[in-house]
Image 1: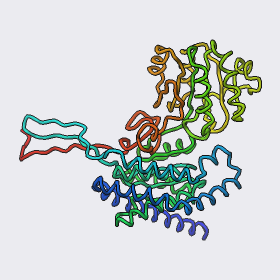
Image 2: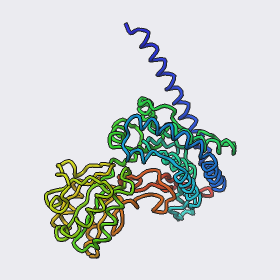
Image 3: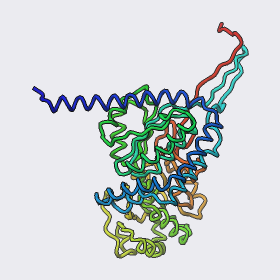
Image 4: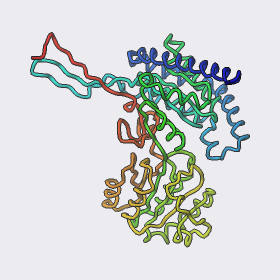
Length: 431
């Protein structure tokens, strides 16, 4: 017989499943409401949310300190801690991000196509919200704000499931948006949060086909693969940010050194940070000593091939799996390549389709790189760190997709819309 503990466990499971069902149902009701909100109301909500974020900064920072204390106790790496930490500057940046979304044009009711039939029918294809979006993410609390703002602007409902690392911070940030919605007497379920880090809740939500319209996982490869394998709902994927910088034979080497330093060390724990540096053999002797001091001062570990070690004496020997690795830390894989074709071949083999850059003054090389590198963002003489929704003028991003269907690269408002056909007549019947 299955004893009392089993019965209690089943009762507990039924309880949280019921709560999740209620949350999803409320999200669908809210989505139908939000789809009809006029632009003026959506913008007012964002204005109010930005102001309240700044006003409640002390409460947000207090919640964040609880998360940081737990993270330190768990031995979290410095790069991952950087993703988690909030301060007055970052809260101000989040508020400014909300204001940037507010300034964007309305993504809804745009006419994408129109046609006038011979029988006088007016046929239009217009943009509409997706509906209920489930976002599963790790560590970075600013994701909460970006996703809520973009969902509200685009008339969608969002269900947020953050990681245990930022649990307190995320709850404090979601509370801001729900307070604003309550102020306007609108459904607070438009922005909701899963108040547990139990993995079973995610598995259950991923079965809600027809009730949740899209899943966006933001986190490590393990999380994303798990979501893809278990979900019955369409998933926008971003497996890894294995970003490359290729320094061409005709590169401005001082420019290249500055770009490599920025791409690797400005924020090494984010998905658009540089992970592998490729250097043309003709400039290796000049470039590697030039960039070596920047990497050493930045306390960046270098793992390179034999040629790299010839010019960076303290570099460790790169293992085969160092190429194609998303370190998310102050670690850089380096390889000296024969030519542009070899660099493209390396990126094709080891890249993740996220962001790759070429540094060159050769227009033909730049064009070839652009045409042959099949990544969601291709940089020419610029840092990979620019692969970001805010930097692209999208206001913020709800994620970065390495897929090719529906959305690709940083996903802003357009990525959160679908479309429908509207056919207007005056009594026509088909013959």
